Amino acid sequence: MTSAEPLLTCERPEQAGPILAIAEGLLEQRFLAGRYAADHGGGVQDSDFSKRVMAAYLERADPVVGYLSVVLEQEAGLRFSGLRSLPYWFHLATWPPDVPLAGDVALDPAPPVGAALYATRTRWGILVERDRDDRAFGAALTPALLVGQRHGLAAGLRHIVGLIDTGQILNVSDVALSATILLRAAAVTRDDAELFGEILGDPPADGAGLVTYGADLLDERFQHPVAGSSRITPLLEGLLSDAWRRVATIRAASDAGEWWCALTGLRAYLDFVWHVLRWTLASPSRAVEAALDQLEELAADALAIIVAMEVGSLEGVIGWEIQVIEAIANRTGDRAAAERRFRRERMLVPAKLLDAPLDMRWRAPGVRPGNLFAYLADEADPAFLRSPFAPRERGEGDVEGDTKPSVEERAAEVGRALEAAAGMDQGRAPEAVSLLRRLLEDYPWCAPAYRMLAQVARRSGDPGEAVNLLVQALTLRPDEHRAWAELGDCLGELGHEWAEGAAKRVARRLDRG
Image 1 (cartoon, helix red, strand yellow):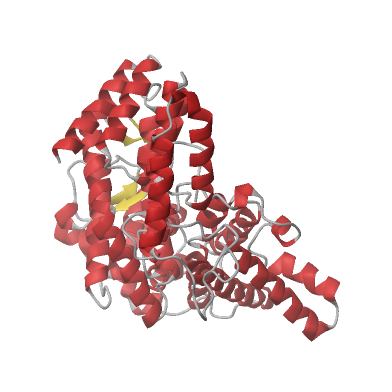
Image 2 (cartoon, rainbow, N blue to C red):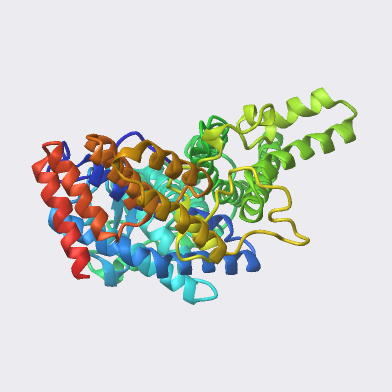
């Protein structure tokens, strides 16, 4: 799901690292919101919740992200780097010229960043407004076939998985059916030449024909589960292996933000794999049946943890994991064996968290999840959200007699701290930094605190640290034109004249609205 390679680049990437970091951070937040919605996209009630999450994102964040991507395209030459995979697919109404209807920016001609984002926004809008997107099956199958036509069967399947990983799919059971049809057809054909050449033929050149491309796979001979074959068995094994790779990534997380971002989307992926294997294979082996049972159990655990984080805290999640161990031990009568089994089969937190109190890396989640938690809390600004990863004070958030401070009380607390820090002169800079850092321990997504720390760092002669802090502030509040102007000033002090100009042009565009 993540990659060390950059997704985006621009005219002068050697100078524009901070600008690219902001843009990539906003895209990662977008992917995170989509994956989170997909985690809740199963049942009817879950689907309603999923739509509320996406409606909040579309209303509050996506217009800014979409506008900013276009501004950065125009002012900094923002574009996809081609070094990292990102699948795309368009409706005819959003299809830009000179790119395929569906593809991957690492394999095919890449669309403009803004066009790719707009296509997903349009699709999300349809899903939010309707009870169900009846076109989801066909729409997901067509792009997979178009990619498979150019790059092979495995690439077509990866395209569907990539759509899930980047939050472009909100109901994975729909796309699981697309993957199943593709795999069933592959199992009864000799090779890609027969599947994509003899049966499907070349994709039509006109738009209307492209939309219906793949209808031949609805033929009766492709509608039944199949035995495993040399064509599809490696692909199905790859899906299962990838499930365990994702679990291993969650268990290896080094801080709260990394853990949460890795966990988000796991339930959706496991649900996808479960459905694909169930629908594709006629007679799964005992090993496959055991793997499917385990996937189902892990998916339920993942959803339980996600819900627990919505209403509780990371400490509560750890407590729940320990309770599961105790429940297994009560059934088996062997505490040590129960813990070994749990850690091997079901654990979805790093093992060290079960053994020791949370340290600061697990209380401060970083900026990436901030806006998502604001949508979940139905708050317009994450600046006033306390960290759900930090230990709660006694009684806070209890079901009975809930004493959780109101948003007005929290806003007042944040406001007093910011006002106090702003009132300290240069001679009291260390005191101001200490106050702001303490504020961020409780309110880790307070963009004004990051911006004020950047101002202190710049006055203290450290424009590099000021840039790092402004990147965090702008990842949380990308429409803050004054922060963009300050970023430009700092980049100029570092000798990056082109990046300074780009940041200041963005500031002027945002200021004009």
